[in-house]
Image (cartoon, rainbow, N blue to C red):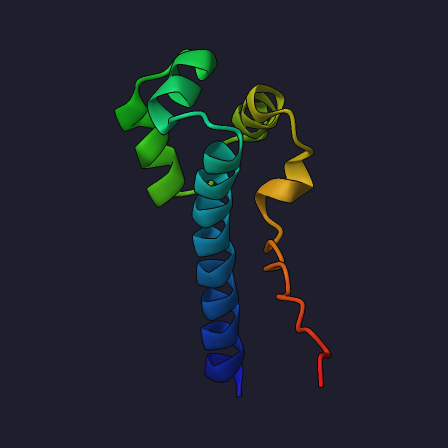
Length: 92
């Protein structure tokens, strides 16, 4: 029972980490900013930014710098973006 709980916790952490990386990339794309430009705004190298996105979560201070540079709330860095639904025509 405990091992199942631990596995579920690790799975949840991995999903959150993946979503964080995807979100930062998507927000950069939406704002027409490259990850290299974001890294420059943060005062780090693009390699450093990639390591933060692929590795453990950055510290709160780094998250605040990322959200400030992208002009989004911290929570948006972890939220899954909804895909806009295609409107279907009701022509008969």
